[in-house]
View (cartoon, rainbow, N blue to C red):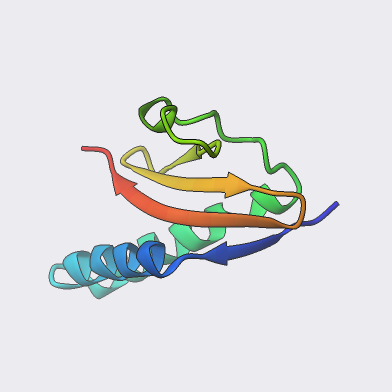
Length: 93
């Protein structure tokens, strides 16, 4: 079963900030990382529970999950029957 993916306004803003930061040094690196972050969400369509429950967000009512990307970033997301919503992109350094 494939589930739709939606990026929240917050996640898009964080993704854009990451892109702008890296583009100051290397446009190529910025594009590569931006695409890697976007593409890393795609397998969640088939395996939505792939990421573990995010321990830093256990106190919230909904079940936030995280997926590590490129060692330093986490996609923070939730899963419902119809939708995977990416809520944030964390820089974990």
